[in-house]
Image (cartoon, one colour):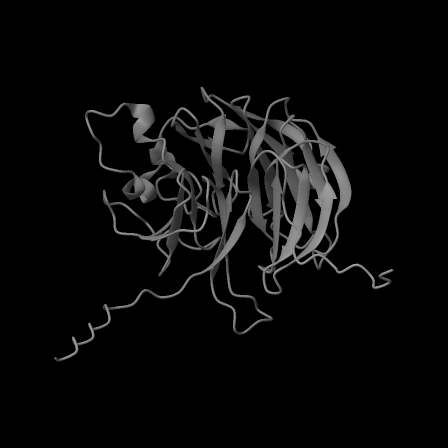
Length: 328
């Protein structure tokens, strides 16, 4: 009989029926979290390319976000409307349950901490964004109500005072957090704001990713291809030098634009790797403890349940010269 110990698995990842939805990066830029319909929450090391930790969730995972300070909190939005808060520790190698929130009974499709870590926003399929006070044990402060469809994306302003949100009805709304939560009547009130992230597919800085309008196409078909966007960097200026914008579509393509992207049919570079629609992105800055690391992009896809790690490299300035044809 074979007495050798069983060989360790070469790879352990998301599996089963359903899709892979959530991805987020830790403050140290080395740890990445993912969640999906297989009801697992996983932590990964981007440098060693190994899974650090995995726990079973009580429901399908739809969104995940790390806190923006050193407390190590990780929030996960679930299909049944729950939000689970975990402590992943300073090194991000373990997950310990902290608190259970119940903003609604519908999918929590996007979730984000504010840059100063005062607030946690949970965007749901109940057409609302629920706001929590992190400093008061995640007390429910209220909700942003006004969208006519489910929430698709959210971004905090750099000063944590404002939130921009988009919905499945292609609405872009702005909300003020203090002194009380309210919807802003005009985009002019946030025109000069800097945003900590940009994942909303609508707005002036991302208008160039949309295809040129065709009078023969209806509104649904024109906007069905684009699935998710993400700007490189966090906390920087809207016009930071060399900022990039990643866009994922239903065909599994990952497109990279210069940011801001304001011209129709703007040039881009397209990468292929996913076999189903792209569901989410996060950019990763170079690791401080790894001098060889560079800016990277992590993308997730739905049915193939894959997480791909891309290295962002400078584009060639010119095409290589063609080799001369051999003489007879």
